[in-house]
Image 1: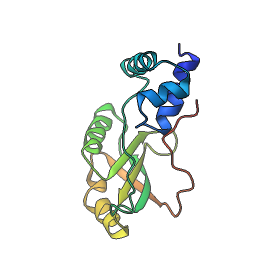
Image 2 (image 1 turned 45 degrees about the vertical axis):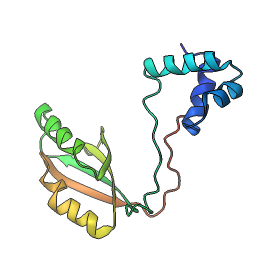
Image 3 (image 1 turned 30 degrees about the vertical axis):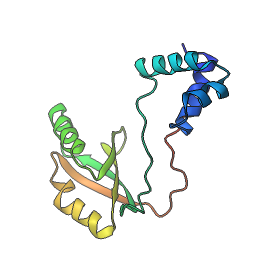
Image 4 (image 1 turned 180 degrees about the vertical axis):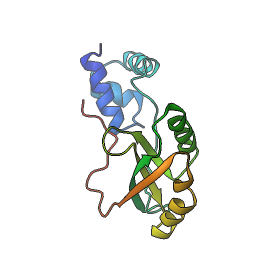
Length: 151
């Protein structure tokens, strides 16, 4: 079970992953050694999965964000495994989620532009194991984009 101090640590580091231990300890009302020990325990117990830099996709020529519904031709374990294996090696795919409902997977893709997406769709996605049908949703405006969990 997480303590109030653990929650404070998690809230702060998910917003400021590069905060120093000294500053984190001060803001959490802990000694630096106690803060360091708690942070280490939270990592070891899997509450903290890693630290990442957030990059600006427009400055890196990946401005177009696309969501894709994927409907599989068969819903068997081996088809799902083959599809998942193929997805994991594709750098354009940022996220892939198996979902319940009218389709099987929801994929999040970042590419340079619509021509790059068309190439990805025609040359790659439709040829992946088990793909029967796709529906594309181009994002016009990112209203909210966060990785922060409400704690």
